[in-house]
Image (cartoon, rainbow, N blue to C red; front, top):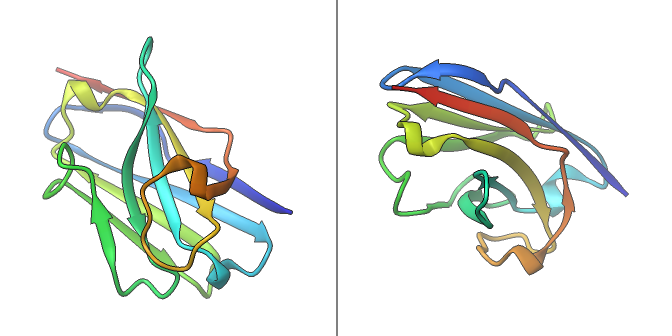
Length: 124
């Protein structure tokens, strides 16, 4: 079992910054790549970013590349999503998830544990 708890969501102005955190417990943190996903009202949940178990590689959705940065601190069992220059269209519930794989992977079916989500609202 893995427990994932997101924090750091809230209201942010467009062009500002916000950092999301996801604290993990249970299964060895370094046995999983970690991903962030988001779901806007009335839309499906979409991939945002993923980082490998070691932190050496990351991959981003086109919509956030260059603005968001995913990182992890394996000593703290925590993964982060730094959101710079957010836009109103980034408004969504953000979820972190633990993958069944060690390396970067996008498909949601490859993630077996999910957090409860944290709301991010970007005002214009």
